[in-house]
Image (cartoon, rainbow over all chains, first blue to last red; front, side, top):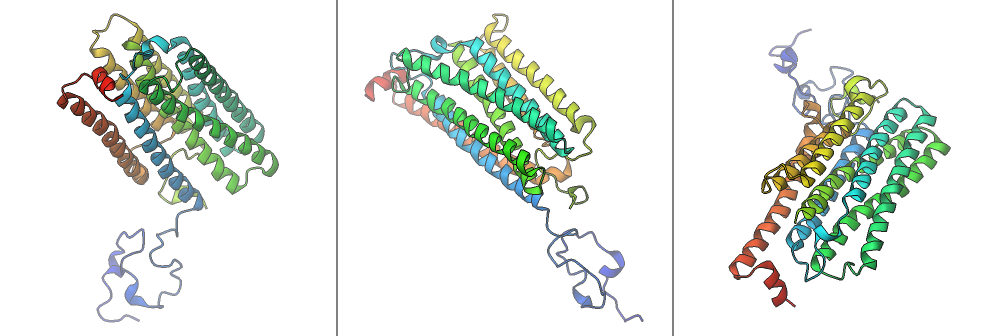
Length: 232
Length: 127
């Protein structure tokens, strides 16, 4: 049975992935099985994995904005040594190279761990995560040793504005790495006891994002603070 | 629910069938590029071959390039249409970072300049 003047949308079927338009508004219930509710997109709302991942991405960007404030403070105060040591006098490039290598390699092993997890290989996931943790611990150990050596030389954060900004910025990154290591340990325990349940996989995804973001911040730290500071 | 038929991706997302550039190969290529860029940074900072005023510029450019490598190969943020939301959020974050850093440096440099003091003298007067 055909009614006069049918709705034009029923002929052209316009592309409307989020089902916002009035394409089926005039039809009432006559279609029978339209399934989705209006406004929920072609396939329904996004999966929880997408929502969680995107939300964590927003958090990471806000964290990077936090780091940018510390970078700005360091950039402004880098010359204010107040008669104390300058960057060129206290930065050790060999130690920096080992730290950078550890963190870069840990980002790689973390990525391989996420591939293993996607393939449901429990054993290799744990191995890659453990390697990530060991590399992170080495990084943190070297950094703590560097801080302790500086403080012992009388170049602690209270010595000058430059050193305050240096300890604040590098210490904030180290704090993130430390929290990341705790998170990593709880993730390994969750995989061991619960297996690859959806909520465990979402947490693992967020941890991967967090760890890669820390490596990106470290690129800024070793370039701006250490390498540029060593020049003069 | 599989997110492949949905048209949205998230940073760092993996799927079980990841092979080729999205799988381990992608991470290996990313690691290689990152190590290369890091080594170039360290070399430029320690060599005398480069004209001195160009060294800071080169280090900053290499750092930005390496951040891009990390974003693409480790976080899987690309310019594809299903990544639009991630890119828009990232662009906003970068805008804020640039405003905070460049704005702080700019304002503080002018402050020192307008008070006719070198930064070191300023430190003396602010005691």
